[in-house]
Amino acid sequence: MDYLIAAHSDAGILKKINQDALLVKVALSALGRLCLCVVCDGMGGLSKGELASGTLIRAFERWFERDFPEMLKGNFDVQLLKSVWMQMILDENQRMGAYARHQGALMGTTVTALLIIQGQYFLMNVGDTRAYMLDRALHQLTKDQTWVQYALDQGSMTLEEAISHPRRHVLLQCVGASDTVVPDFYQGGVLPDQMFLVCTDGFRHRVSPEEFYDYLNPGAAVCETDMTDGLQTLIRMNKQRRETDNISAALIRTCREAQH
Image 1 (spheres, one colour):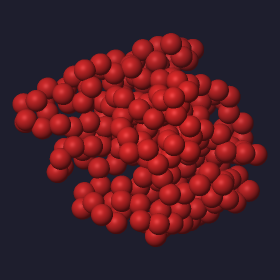
Image 2: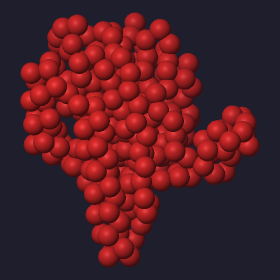
Image 3: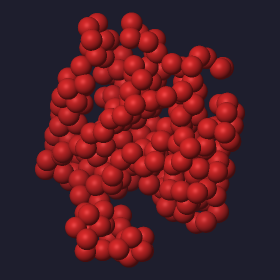
């Protein structure tokens, strides 16, 4: 399986610093071609959010280039992947927290990491950066770790109330600013001609799921140019509708063979 890639990040209409960060890597291994995508949404005063998201992206990049090849020498071990990613998150959470306390500041980042390998996808999520899959419909693959999502799960809030609730942006945890971090993990099968979207919350606040699907479905986003155009169109729509957050997204299309 091969992959077509598009990614775009925008500071938005209000913030001077883009605190989002993203990484997309494709590599050929003994187990076939694989793809890693990581998207982070940093938070904190001044450049601290940018530092948090960038630090975690670099940690994933080091793992992918230095440690991951060793994991691929035998059969791919899902439990080992979860354990390694979990330890990475715990280490970075502790490191960022210590730095922030030393600086007298608060900093943290969300993270959603997606690995596609051997016809399977594996996801890890902390916070409210999301992953979706698009085929004949739009499927949200991750669940937000937010106060309103918890209230929805408990049945104490309706979806209509959640959309406009003043605490809708409050995270239950993030990497760097939480005493403990417990990521959520997801996995599933992958077929050719599916689209995987990983995006920060700024990308989805003012765009509907129907609009996501209109611009990013497999029939509309056939090549990397189409994919990039779709992402940029949705980012412009967010900005025109006065989205004030940073806006970032990565889009991956699976395919049977290279179409570059």
